[in-house]
Amino acid sequence: MRALLSSLVLMAAALALPGCASNGQMIARASVMETAQRVTADYARAWNANDMYSFGALFAEDARYVNLNGDFVRGRSAIVSVHGRNRSRYPEGVRMTARLEGARAITDDAIVSVMIVRFAGEASPPNGVEAARITLTLVRRGNAWLIAQAQASAPS
Image (cartoon, rainbow, N blue to C red; front, side, top):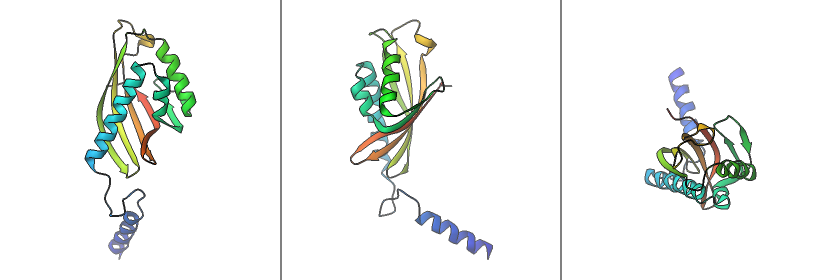
């Protein structure tokens, strides 16, 4: 009886999972990786160009960002402001490289990805930050994938 009840609970939970496509399939792995790779590349491209408009366009209006200092930044405009100030501390020649470590679909409208960013071109970067691991939660809003949540940490 307990096994039957457990099976029924598991089946009901599986049927109620949010984000499963109507055919019961998650988004294709290739699409997940392409989406995460594009966001990773656009993140570095916007930062390197000091283009805070394009940088901000990567984020949902209500996005959240926890930076390396542990500050919890709320909202696209605040995230852009913080990153704009941080970017201004680096000389123009400093470049960010970003490498996608991995990505996984949580639902058909949510992806979690992890990227490593590194800074090159200066012997002594501001605040001693030379690299970071950033975990992103991407959400689909219409036809666009936006960063809803980001968490930066020191890479291991």
